[in-house]
Image 1 (cartoon, rainbow, N blue to C red):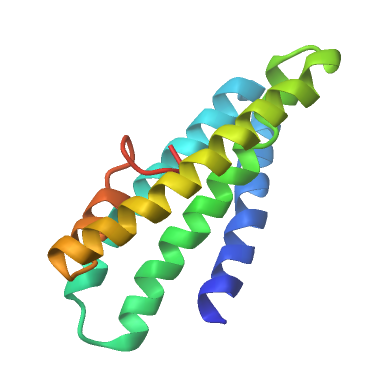
Image 2 (image 1 turned 90 degrees about the vertical axis):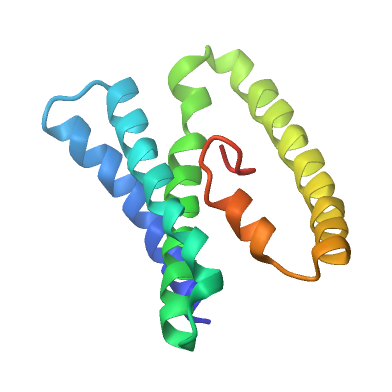
Amino acid sequence: MAIYLLSDIGSVAGGWGSSRLMKIGRTVNAARKITMLICAVAVVPILFAQFVSQLWIAVAIIGLAAAAHQAWSANLMTLPSDMFPRAAVGSVVGIGGTAGAVGGMLMSKFNGYILGVFGSYQPIFALAGVPILSPSS
């Protein structure tokens, strides 16, 4: 429950963060991308979740990553309306949703394979902690 609550907070904070940057004079493009950069960096500590022996510290690290992912998503979902003409927004979002669903299916298979080979979540957490490689990038 704690991780989901932190995800909720991240979702709201992501929208608030980019809106705040726009209010202080950043362009929509810059505000969204700066917020998304902060979110990408906030996911990196997930690398250390596998080495933590205390439950609530692990929950906090995973919760931070989940919150950052949701904040990223809050900004990512509104980018098409910022970048494309109104008539194209639905198609762009549909294509992106399809790509995300296919990526999710592939990651599920990949995670099963990695668990079978290594018997550990360590490689999966390592992959999740690399912003350029993680599925939310």
